[in-house]
Image (cartoon, rainbow, N blue to C red):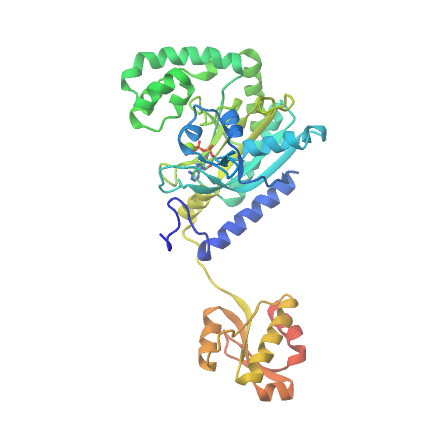
Length: 421
Ligand code: ATP
Ligand code: MG
C-alpha cells in the first residue's frame, strides 16, 4: 500500500515527460493562435453542480463520481469533467458581460471511479476548450477546428472526425419517442442496465458499451431524421463551414455522448490505433447549460480531449519516446577547495542559462566522470587547487575526447561559443 499508487492512477515522469511537455506546449501555442485563454478551476466543486449539468441518469453521475462530505458536511465531488466548473466560473464572474464569445481552455486532472484498463484511468487528464456566447454553427466549427489543427500538427494518423446533431428539446422529444418504440421491440436482447435506461433516458442506450446492445443499437432509428427545420439548417451550415475549412468529417447518427447537457452538434475524434478506448476527443454544443446552472441563456460549445489516450495514440503510431538525459557541462572537482568552487561555478553558469551540473554526493574523480557520461554532459571540467590558483582548467569535449585550456573567469562565454557551434 505505502509504495503503490492508488488503482487507476499513474506517476508521470522520466521518459514520458518530454512528450507531455511538448504536447501541452503545442496546445498552449494553438490556443494562443485561436485567441483562447487559459482557465484553472478547482479540482472539486459542489456535488449539486454535476448532478444538474452532467445529468443524474448518466454513467458518470450514477457510477463514476468521487463524492464525499467535507468536515462541515458539504457534499463535494472531484471533477469528473471540466465543462460544469468552467460554466460555473463563466456565470460567477459575469463573463457574459465581456465581448462575446468567451473562449477558454484548460489542461486538467479529472477523476472518475471506473474499471481501469488501457486508456481508462481513475485520475486522467483532459485538455478542453469551452466557447460561450454564440448560437451560430461558426462557433461549433471553430471549436472543432482547434482539435482538428492539433491532430494535424501532431501528425496523428488513423483518426476520424465524426459529427452528429441531437437537435433541440423538441427534436429530442420526437426522437426519444421513436427510440423508445424501437428499444421496446428489442428490449429482451438488451443488458440489465439498458433496460432501466430505456425507462429513464433512452438516449443513454445508444452509448452502451456491451457487445449485445451495440449489435441491436446498430439498427436504431437515426436522430437526424427527427431534426426540425432550424436544427437541420444549423447542422447543414456546420458541415458547409467545415468543408470550406478543409476539415474532413463523417456524419455518424449513432454519436450521442455520455453527458446530458448536449444540444444540437455532438462530435468525436476516433482512432483505430489504441483498441477499445478509441475516442480521443469528444464534445458538442450545450445551449441550455448556462441557464440551467443559474446564468443567462447562452449558446456554448466545447470539447474534452483525453491526454493519456492522445499520447497512447502517438506512442502506438510513432513508437515509444527515447529518453536521453542531457547537460551542457559537468563541473567535477578534486579536493575540498575544488568541491566548494565547483558548486559556485555551477551556480554561476546556471544563472547564465547554461545547463550545468556538479557533484553533490562526494564521489571520487573516477565516479564523477562516469556520472558525467550518464547525465549526457557535452563538456566536462575538473576543478582542484591548481586550477583555482591559476584561474585555468581543461575543458573536455566529451564526444570527441579533446581538451583545451580555458580561463575560469571566461568559462561561461567559452561554453556558450562552443555550444553555438
Ligand atoms: P468513454 O466513452 O471512452 O468512456 P466518455 O464519453 O466517458 O468516454 P468524455 O466524458 O466525453 O468521455 O471525456 C472526453 C475524453 O476524455 C474522452 O474522449 C477520453 O479521451 C477521455 N477520457 C474519458 N474518461 C477517461 C478515463 N477514465 N481515462 C482516460 N481518459 C478518459
Ligand atoms: Mg466514460
